[in-house]
Length: 308
Image (cartoon, rainbow, N blue to C red; front, top):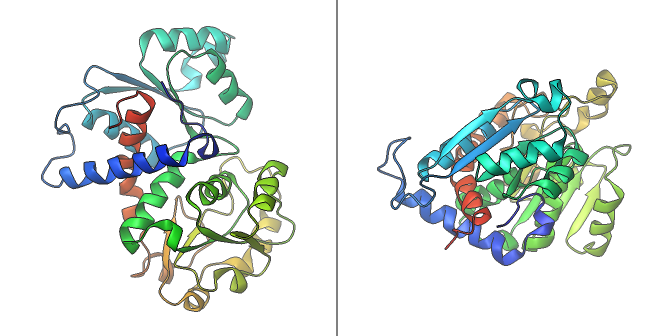
């Protein structure tokens, strides 16, 4: 049994095995319809229980289709439907029930503390579908897409992040360390990373660099990643934040400084990228979103000890 909570907790070897398996599975599905099962149905009879405390489209769809294509089933829960929120049932007791009924649990949460508590009390694997500090499934899928579109190992590429210091960036930084790729981060001055992430950067300052100037950050980039500036449940002065990020908007002019770089965006989109770039030839956001199905499948197999 393996959990999938943070990129930093998983060995580089296992992360690469997940990507290799995802590539094989995508190739084998070319002639299959959406709900047709993979050959062998490796997770036949298995139940994935999902709980969403935050809005979700791609994570919800991709995990549902992932378990179905592997031969299993999925059940989606909302916290307002459970005793956990309405009746005051403890996480410990909830985790025991989930472990009795299901085979694997995916949690999308607004509480890092809750994620840790579920990990402690579950006897089935736990997948982090998004938490305040991490979005590991998104970033591993992004790496899959980057290698697919560039046809190169990510360790040979220059990756650039333009945007907020959020959970997606935290996981990208952890991935940079695991996969040994160069990462430039472009973000306004007053938006700081956590102490833990800053310590990770200090230990890897030869490959991870931060800039308060987007033009310097994007130089020589092969792929540019970004995210919505105003995130879900962002408790900040939104007008001020939007103003602070105006110079960091990804426009054609900014992208021209990176020659032939591709654009990735984990979605949903805000005003951080222009229409011309977002819908342009160098944007791979739809391919990026679709690839999550294939990588989630391999994550599920990894967690249940079925990855070959």
